[in-house]
Image (cartoon, rainbow, N blue to C red):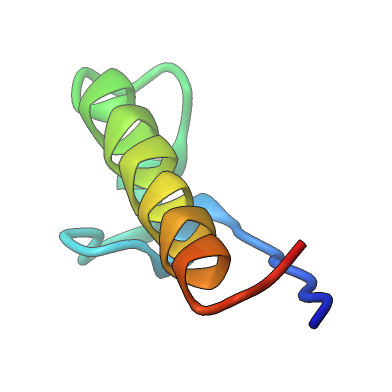
Length: 52
C-alpha cells in the first residue's frame, strides 16, 4: 500500500483564525509543532497499517 499525505497549517487542530497561520504571530511556533505532530501521527498510523 502506498499513501500520499498533504498537510497545510490551516487544517490542523486548534487553528480557528487565518491570522494564526502567519509566521509573524506569537502562536505560530506552537501551531507549527502541532502540525508536525499530526503529520507524524498520520505517517505512523499508515506504517502500522501496512504502508511502505
